[in-house]
Length: 165
Image 1 (cartoon, rainbow, N blue to C red):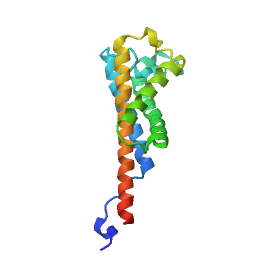
Image 2: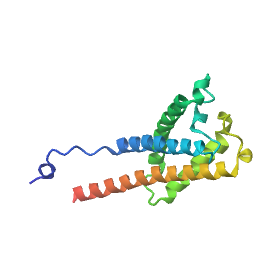
Image 3: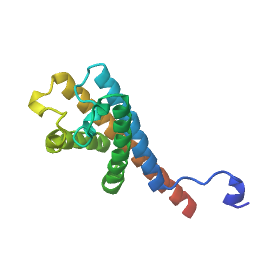
Image 4: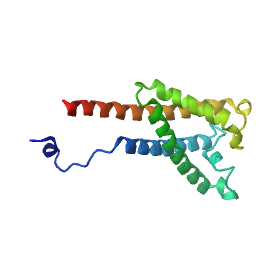
């Protein structure tokens, strides 16, 4: 009996790049929502809405619609971040690379891209709660993206090795 006959009519496995897409989208939506909850409960001064503030006119951006659109935009940007991780770091084992990736993203947003977002104060002006909450959110986001992509990469590598033997 061939491997295909054993599997029957089970759905095809998702391609690795499709998995990266969905991991990035889900990661951005989920951690963007967690970021909104953290800002709602005043753990951080930075709301997901800071991403649309410089480019969108009108007060609607400060309401629920602005929040939803901001979280969706974070999901789209997270897809890009996931593909960057996939391109640069997918071969490295362990969660430390994801943790480091989250720290690099935090530094990128709060130090380099900070002038693009008037809703984010300079690092020196941010409260300690905001800094701690934000760095933790970026770290768990980086670990989520990194570990998910690395796990799938290793799993695919094992499956290819088993199929070739």
